[in-house]
Every structure is written in C-alpha cells, then in structure tokens.
Amino acid sequence: MKLKKLMTIGLSLMLSLGVVACNNNGKNANENTKGTKVETPTGDNTSVRDNDYVTQYSRFYGDYMNDLNNYKVYLSPQSVSKYYETNEYPGNEKYLSNVKEAYKDARDKTQAFVNNLKNDVKIDDKELDKMNKDLIREGEKTIANIDTKLKNLDKISKEDLSKSKEDFMRVVDEATKTDKGEKNQFEKLLEDMNRSLGIDTSKYNNTNNNNNNNNNNNINKNDNVKK
Image 1 (cartoon, rainbow, N blue to C red):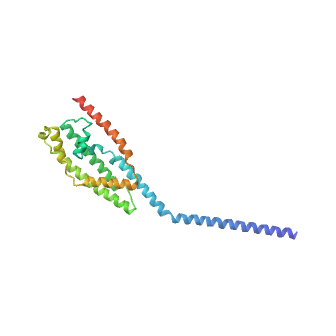
Image 2: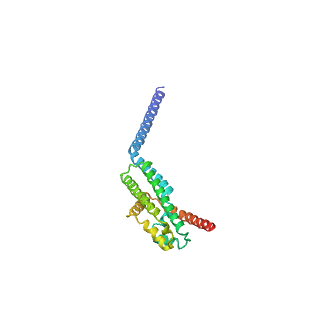
C-alpha cells in the first residue's frame, strides 16, 4: 500500500514538473516572438512606406508622363524631320495646331503629375523625399517653360502661315526655343527616379509608340477625307 502511494506521489510530481516546464517554454517562446516584433517594426514599416511610394509614383508616371511622344516630336528640328520622313506633312496651319495641342497636352499632364507628387504622397526616407521635391521643382519650371512656348506660338502670324513648309517649320522652331535646359533637367530627374525605384519604362514606351502611330495614321486619313 505504501509503495502504491509513493508511486502515485512520484508520478504526480513528474506530471507537475512537466506542466511547469511546458509553461515556461511557452512563455519563453512568446517572449522571444514579442522580442522579434519589437526589433523589426521600423525596418518593416520603412519598407512598406517605400513600396507605397513606388506604387504611387508608378501609377502617376504611367498616367501622365509615359505618353508624351507627340510632344517629343516637336522638341527639335531633328525629331521633326525624322517624324515627317514617314508621315505626311499636313500643311502649315494644321502643323501649328498639332504643335500647340502636343504642348498643351504635355503641360496638363506634367501639371497633374506634379500635383500628385506634391499632394498625394508621404515619404519618410530623406533621400527619396529630396528626389521627390527636386522633381516637383523642375516639373514646375517645365510647366512655366511650356506656357511661354505656347504664348510664342500664338504670336505666329497669318503671313508666317503663307511661308513654305521648310521656312514655316523654322518659324515654329524659333518660337519654341525658350528653354534653358529645364526640360532636360526634368527628364534627367525622371530617369534618375525611375532607375532608383527600379521602374522599367520600356513597357510603356513600346505600347505608346504603337498607339501614337495608329493615332497619327487616323489623323492623316481624316485630313485626306476632308480634302
């Protein structure tokens, strides 16, 4: 009888010790888990914030800055000449109208892009914040520069419209020679930001080139029908 009591007491002690050990292990595991969470939130949150900016910037760039190929056609005599090697010249009046439309489109899209960068993003990373502010500053310079060009294009006279194709294209080129590197600086900052964020713009450009070619072909067909 005494032996059974001793065995019962011993078994009870072993079970009690086992439960305590399990509780301690569970407690330590929980403490370790809590410790891990305390150590990593800053890095995790920073990563999330960066990812949020990448997502927002990518959307803004895709919506506004990736489809400016029509505008880029008229940025230099070389790009204009290259374009009209494969596209029919629409006449001086229509050419001037196309240039104005391309510049207005670029101005409005750049303004929308800048407004979104200014009002709709929050950045805690200092280097990224500086790049964002630089983009806003140079974007605003570009907008002002385009407005100046549009005012100059509005000054082109009826007499100018009667000039030959080559002479008239030179008149338009002179009217848009107002920038002092602002656009180049803005585009450079865009390229730097895209590179820093790992954004591949080629996927946008290929699609836009096809869309622009289709649009220009449709415009030329419509002009021919009107004639």
